Image (cartoon, rainbow, N blue to C red; front, side, top):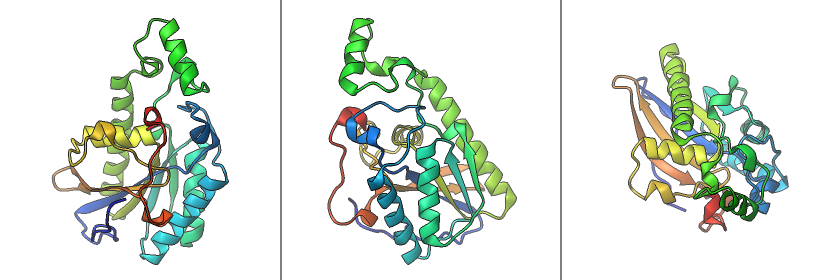
Length: 230
């Protein structure tokens, strides 16, 4: 967990759209180390509590979202619903398949060990060799995000926006933005962590302000027990 910084606040600059990039809450598949990808899994009770705590945390800091863009998978939809209920806010919410996690293909629904064995049996170097190609995933995700944010910027009505997505998707965005404070390949974005990115309208530049805030979950550093499932 990193210390709080002034960027954890509402943006008031009309030349900036501040993105609060939120990973969905915990699912049972997260706990059991089962690969999800595009599987439409629900939050478990811990995931709902995480989302509620984040909503309370944001409300206490007077964060106000002008709009929300979320992955259309249930674990993200349920996360933002629980957050907004705690914030007593009803900003417009739109759901996008472009913000989904990378599709894992035939290994979706497998335990990590089963997926590794399956990959070995089929002559693959890694279970990550299945499903959506890395370059296709990057194009789908970043193209979708740019379109969403540019449309928000052009509206002139959005200064602060929530983006609700998935762990692998958020790490991919950070690599795309050349985030180097920590090795972007090793970053762990915990369930309901918040990454803050500013979009500068004048230049079209994205600036990473903060990565993986988990202060709403209490003291301590929150990590994923199996780094293969970052």
